[in-house]
Amino acid sequence: MIAPQMKRAKQEKKFAAELKRGDRVITKSGMHGKVVDFNDKDASCIIETLAGKIKFDRSAISMEMSKKLTEPEKAK
Image (cartoon, rainbow, N blue to C red; front, side, top):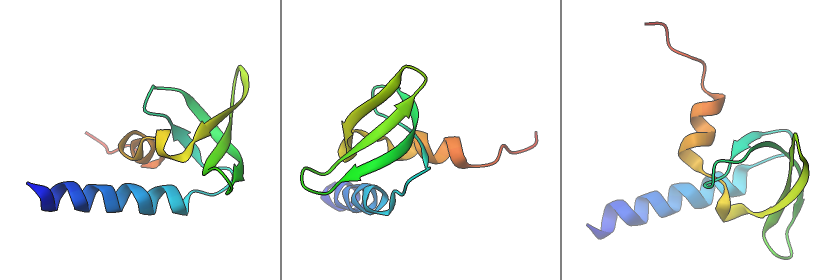
């Protein structure tokens, strides 16, 4: 039970570290946007949405939903 949780935590940490400007992301609360800037002091990033720019913690970005957003759609 512990090993899968540790593997998932490691993957999420790697995903957050590999984010770059211009990446389209979805937060865990469902907010869609594009990464504009990073702040390494407090591990946050600024995401641009249609409503404006919002500051989020990097851990608030959903790895699964963001990867689904960037994957090409599969033909049925």
